[in-house]
Amino acid sequence: MEFFRSPNIDFLGKKWYFLAFSLVFSVAGICSMLFWHGVPLGVDFRGGTLVRVKFTKTPNLNEIRGLMDRAGLHSARIQQFGPTSNNEVLIGLAEKETSEAALDQGRSQIINALETRMPSGKQDLNNASAQNIQNYLLSKDPLHLGTDAAQRYQDMGQAIVHQRDAVQSGVLNSMNDLKGVVPPPVLASLNEGFGLSDFGVRNVDVVGPQVGKQLQSQAKLAILYSLAGMLVYLWFRFELIYGVAAVVACFHDTLITVGAFSLANKEISLTVIAAILTLVGYSMNDTIVVFDRIRENIKLLRREKLADIVNRSINQTLSRTVLTSGLTFLTVLSLYLFGGEVLRGFSFALVIGILIGTYSSIAVAAPMLVAYQDWRTRRASSGRPMPPPPPTVSRREKVRAKA
Image (cartoon, rainbow, N blue to C red; front, top):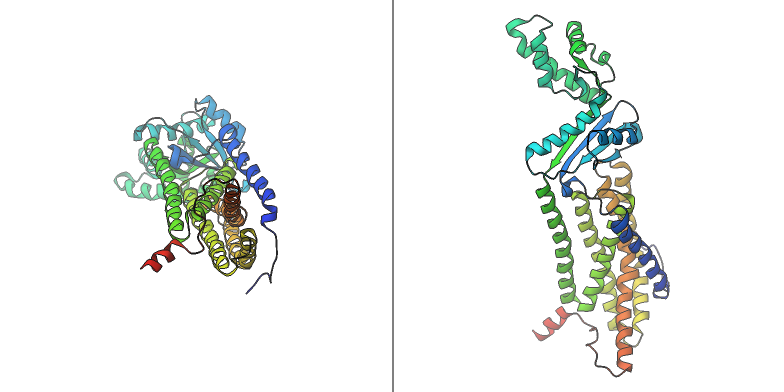
């Protein structure tokens, strides 16, 4: 199947437009990382506590930030989680200590700051554990069960937590939500000892700072090693200039993708690193397809200029590029739109990466080959010694010929 029949687009004639496009987005991303949002690392890398909170009504982020400030948590990161209708917020707190006790303390500080509006002397039923509920009921024994109370109240505590977390999506709006879940005497007793805050903690992620720094280092090394390995592979399969051009294109893709996260102030997590490594491989694969066609055409069209050969090669592979990249883009776009908040960062990286990776194979890697050839030609005209020209056969074919 062909998307285009005999296209004849002068891609290299538009190289300065491509260069301007790349410069604008690269510089914007770098400026954002240096002066505006920085590199928005997730809790996986910076360490600390990340609490996902469900509210009974649309939360006011400025009010939540004020509560955090009054509690002394001035560095807390607060952002909406998921659709507005979910009434969920992510509250992140960086930790300097490495002990588990310090990390647990950070979680408790966030909860205590949000519970300042709770009635004094009462526990918060929206954030109480089944064990706390059981202990309270055992102390009051509203059903007068005596020695048989432990198992019965344990079941009631678990039923209340299930009603709150599974049925009411993490937060009770009123004590009436428990009608039919527990007997009326138990509900009356709960009214005496418990109150309801307007929020409930849905999930807590805790990562120690040392672990976060280690993950940062490993993520950087993973990206660098992948680029270095691909450089060596292309050096062996084609020639060094091909490997350099492909790696520069992949670095260009990575820079723009990370810059997009900084501009959008989206956190970079471990899943985002996995997406970046995926797009590095995808971009490299697309570049190799173009390079293979260039190498074949160099053998067939020896008398034509390299610029014309590169243009023809890109046009010949354009139908394949649009089909494969277009279908992949539609897949990751669907994942971004319908995959949910957990996969939002991963899919956002792939959406940006597929577009930029396809673009860079045509607009960055291929023009570098022509620029190198032009540089060699100018150097030859000036009488200076030149490096060897790009071969018309691959290094691997040379090895085979010698064998």
